[in-house]
Length: 115
Length: 114
Image 1 (cartoon, rainbow over the protein chains, first blue to last red):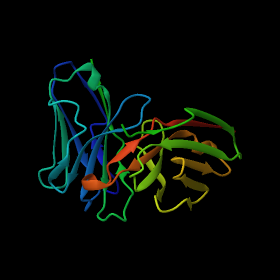
Image 2 (cartoon, rainbow over the protein chains, first blue to last red):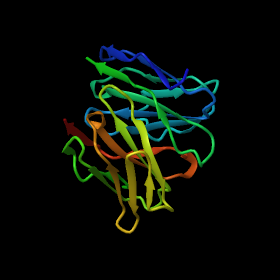
Image 3 (cartoon, each protein chain N blue to C red):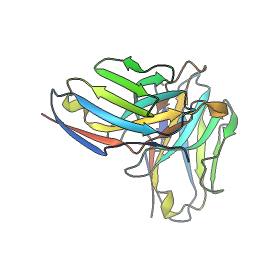
């Protein structure tokens, strides 16, 4: 596709349920980032992949959060035993190669509501 | 810790006016800065970036100024239009092994009145 695609757009989960959020980055983009955006706040970094390698997961808030990108393309962010504080918009971004390339392209996000 | 923050959470202007959105940062190691526009229900959209070795960069109707002495960043929008109404975020990249990892500020809500 032409841009970063995320699915589903909206997800309502009951507390304790597991969820999986999908990101299709721009074709050929090596770098992939996940961010969490709480209502009224700026996005906060969760994790970073370069191809299939997860190079930075310092932003993941707990061991209930897990991300993977097994073939270096599509990525999945999984949240186990969801809690109300997990309610947020989860944004995926991808970026092409090279340090001269600064622009990260964001998807529309998945709005997760835990009830 | 290091952070990026905004002075003004809201800005209201008339159509045709120039808008200035400000941002303070604290990480002197950041090598580039980006301004993003986010409309309701959408992801952040890249507006313009500036590297730390520059102090000014111009785009179409937008100018970004970087003052490293006082660690201040601003976005100027010329002839603001109603379509410019959105939340604007500044973000910085500290480089390192996670190149492209961005730290975002809180955001400024820009409202343009016709």
